[in-house]
Length: 488
Ligand SMILES: [Ca+2]
Image 1 (spheres, rainbow, N blue to C red):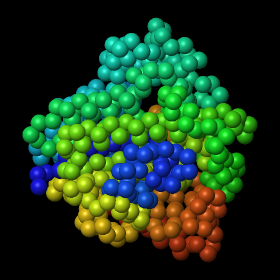
Image 2 (cartoon, rainbow, N blue to C red):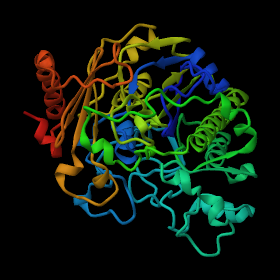
Image 3 (cartoon, rainbow, N blue to C red):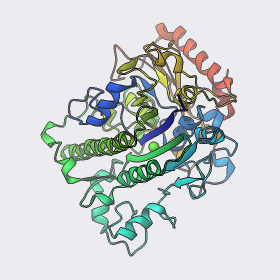
C-alpha cells in the first residue's frame, strides 16, 4: 500500500466531553460521532500544556514544553529569547519530518508558534496562516473578509477605526469579564473555521502524486465564539445545565486559582452564562459540520481509505467548572481533550484506548503509522502497534506543564513564572506540583469533580513522593530546562 496521507485537525479550547460520541447529553456532533465509530478513540487524553502555544508546539513535536522551550504564548511583541514565546528554530515538527520524506505539506489557520507570516517547518509550499494576533497586516483571513465584503467580526476593539462592525456587536461586555465573548453572525463567510476548512478543501483538490500532510488549525471554539443563529437555535437555554462545581469556593486548593482571569465573579449572570454555553455548543456543532465537509471531499476524491485523519484540541475549556472559564490549570475540563484517529485502510473501527494518552504521544504514533519517526529525542511514545491490532497500549504516566498566566501573557519573563506547574496522571491519581503554592492530589474515580485535595493528607505521603519522583524522571528524560526545580 502507498504511504498513507495524514490530516491533522486541531481545534482550540474544545472540552473533552462536549461531543456526542463522548456522551454529552446535548451537543450534536454527527460527523465526529461517525468518525469515532469508524476509528480509534483515545478516551482519556491530556494536553501537554493547558495553554495555546506551548501545547501546539508539544502536539507537533512530541515533546513537553521543558524541552521544546516555548513556555509562553507567541505574540509579535514577544520575540526576545528570554520570553520563551517562539518555537526553537531547530525544533523538529511533524511538518519537518513529513516534508523531508517526500510528503506535500499544507497548513491552514493559526500557526501561533512564532513569526506567523513566514512559511516554515515543512509547510512552505502551502502556508495559509492567518495571524490571529489581531492588528498585523497583511493578514490572509482579514484580507478575505475585505475581499468578499463581509464585516470582520474578529477585529479587536483596538483595530482600525474604519471597521464596519460596531463595538457592541463585536464584544459582549458582561461575558467579556468571564473571558468568553460570543456573538451571532449573519453570513457564514464571516466564520473563521469555515474559511480554514475551505483552504483545506482547496489543498485536497490540488493533490498531486505525492502523499500529503494537511494540518488544519481550527481556532474555534476559542473565543470569540462567533456562530450562525441556526446552530444556536438548536440549544434552547432551558436545556442547558450549569456544572455541579459552578459555585466552587476552591477551599483547600491553591491560592493562585482564585485570582486567575477566568475566575467568575460570585454574582455572574447565570442566564447570560447559559446563553454563552449555548453559543459554545453551537460552535462545536459548526466545527463538526465543517469536519464533515473534509470527510465528504476525501470520499469524492477516493482518498478516504488511505488517509489517516486525527482530530483533537490543543487544550480544553473550563466552561464554568470550578467557577472558572478558559484554561491554564490542570482540572479535567482544562487539561483533558478529545482525541481520535481514523484510517479505514489501517486502523480498526470503534476501538477505544482506555489508558491515559499523552498529547506528546500523538505525533510519534502518526509517524509510526506512516513508518516514519522523529529521529531524535522526544518525550512521547508511539502506540501504533497496539492500536493497529485493536489492543490496549501499556498504561504509563502522562504529564502536562504550564507557566503562570503572567508569563503566558507576557508580563513576566521570570523563570519561576515561565515554568510553574506540572501535572502527572497515573492510574486513577492526578498530582499537580505547584512551584510556589500548595500541591494537589485527587483520586479521580472517587472524586471526579476534583473537590478534595489530598496532597497534605499524611496517609498519602508515600503516594505524593512517588508521583513527584515520576515528574522528576520525566523532566530529566529530555533535560529539565526551566523545570530544574522539580528535577530532584
Ligand atoms: Ca489554544
